[in-house]
View: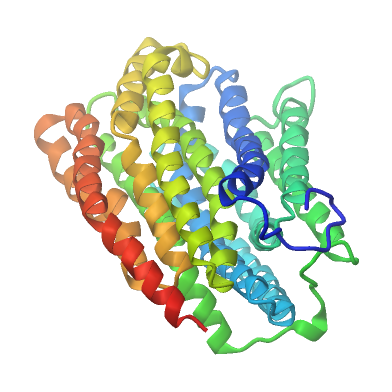
Length: 457
């Protein structure tokens, strides 16, 4: 299974805990490498010596999350559905699912690219760009929209690779892109190279993401993969698209809520003293928190194909062992992330900016974001499980609560009365409510999983 040329799906004989770890480690490393795209950009942009440059990049983060959420609607949904189909021994249908969704992703990427470039200025305004940061935000966002041409189909191909347990090629593709990004950033940004500044950082990332896409295309263009992507498997039927979207929407909604929360936090900060410094600090914090998200997501990428395969094969014992291990693992990982970020909060912010005002806001924001971070791990794991078993309605509900239903009222109201302290308090309060809801839903999740497995066909 680890070979790039693997033609056999995940072995059912391996213990589920071991299989999850075996799949999760390279997936997590690949996602952490992907985080380099954002962190390297932020670090190099900090070297430009402009707080406004950091603010401009921070404005684009919510938009980036929206684009990721659109990717996930179809990519995550197709990955789960194809995993079930492989578990049931129906490789032909899995081929049709992945081929169709990859082609659809290409089309959606083109629409996002053209639409984003046409409406780039009003979009930057909506997401909190001030007059001073608008031009730099537009420069950075332009190449983000171009990258959509590669990102959407690449994400679908990545999910296909995970569905068949070909995690090695997925990791190679993403890590190659990350390394290339580290090399290209200074070449495009600074005066010794092309001197493009913020725009150069975005262009370097875009080139790196296209490199990832082309590696995945190479893998699926021959006979290396279990799932085959060929024109003859193209099946543009509304029923298939609806099925995939229903599975993928909960994951996408998490990203949409993260984006909306980030955007409204920027808006809330815009009305406060030192607004540019708060937004710059929050932009850095968002990118750091994304690393924590990627750790959990990587673990879930190891869990989900195991759960989907077991569900499709109606292997109840293997499925429930996977669920139990994933539940404990997601909580444990988020506790580790929280402890590290709290202890190193000031040091981490200093890596990106030395302005004492930004450092102070950033330290407090980072602590407030992760003080109850296990709420994210618990909620995300349960959303993935409901998604895997086809209980999309409750999965959709869970995906909205942490950064949507609970966070948004707090961030809209508290800063008006408490200033920046209202921003600090919003996430912990939302996390407390999230933990209560998820804890009360664990037993029903396990019971519903058994019921749906028995009725699954």
